[in-house]
Length: 238
Picture 1 (spheres, helix red, strand yellow):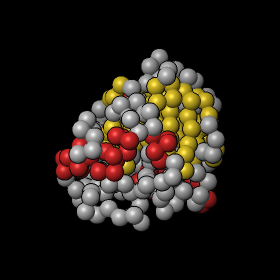
Picture 2 (cartoon, rainbow, N blue to C red):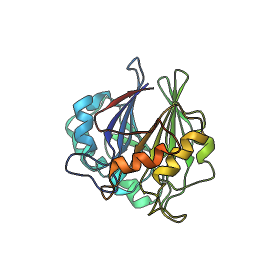
Picture 3 (cartoon, rainbow, N blue to C red):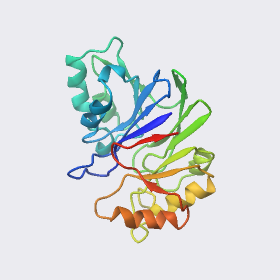
Picture 4 (tube, rainbow, N blue to C red):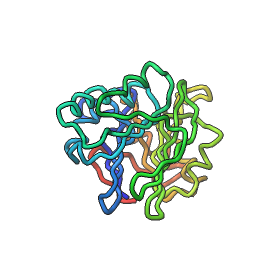
């Protein structure tokens, strides 16, 4: 597999970096999915593939910084209709936002079970966030990618991340701002998670512009020295 980072910011974009969005492709090019579609992601996606090559969208949750570009996506599909409706997998709540995903060229499904898209096996695990949010695991050719989505510590987090070839983790807080009731992990917790999960690689994402990304990286590296920042337009082999 390969992962292309389309956006790495949250809860709002910067002048040069969109919010959360990640293109995952099988090595043979037979399957392509988009994980999350926040502000600015659609433009970045179209730099890498035509929309007709996208097989599905998997949304971790329905906060705006993870799904707002789904709205202009409807217009794109209206003028470039796919042969078959684009499959979208998302939590059902909040239901009003879930219905915004519905359109003439989409089919929306709840993300409450495993699914197969070409050689990819995709599963979801509930995380801990102010609205229903899921980690997304993609398995393909004996490789495992885990994207935490937005979460604080959660009962299924470690078991979900264990053995990941690449862990894409929510580093939405620095150590000073972290708290047990906050909606995100800290950079240090991301590093500790990668260490405890025996992950082969760690990318920090959902970077808040109030923090220096390099400072977040150093916090994570205290626990996982190989940690890296998820960088927009970079392609990572898995």
